[in-house]
Length: 166
Image 1 (cartoon, rainbow, N blue to C red):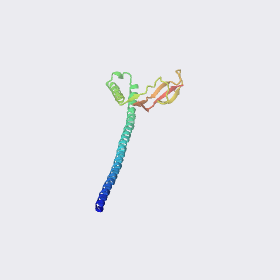
Image 2 (cartoon, helix red, strand yellow):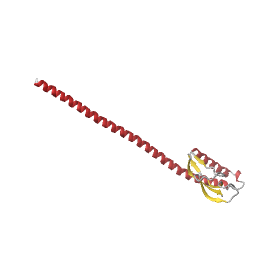
Image 3 (cartoon, rainbow, N blue to C red):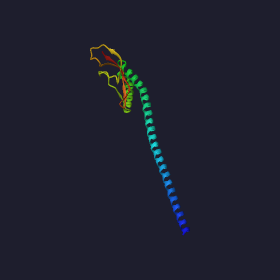
Image 4 (tube, rainbow, N blue to C red):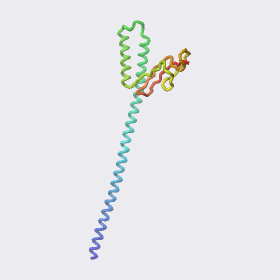
């Protein structure tokens, strides 16, 4: 009988050891699983942050690119403004105006909008006052636009440079 009790006790201890070993394995499994889930969440957040940084970089580069193109638009505006008398019928003058229109249409399709400033009330958020002008017009109104201002997708990228009535 003692032998039988000893065998039963050993089997019971083996079962207890197996249960302990199983619990340890389950605990390790749960730790690995929760660690993997945290890493997965961290990686998803990292991908989102990198995507956001990439969009911000693209937006920054687009603004720089548009600002360079606006210099060309300004020069076309000056050329058209100072067109010689009688040049309306010349093909080169028509070509310059067509290029100007095409460039402005392209910029508009990219989200660039001109700020309408002439005759508007001065707003320091979108206008830059270069000079105050004595005038019979209403005080605080824009008397002359020296350089057009623009927004890109609703964000100011270049303020209008203006003369304001005193």
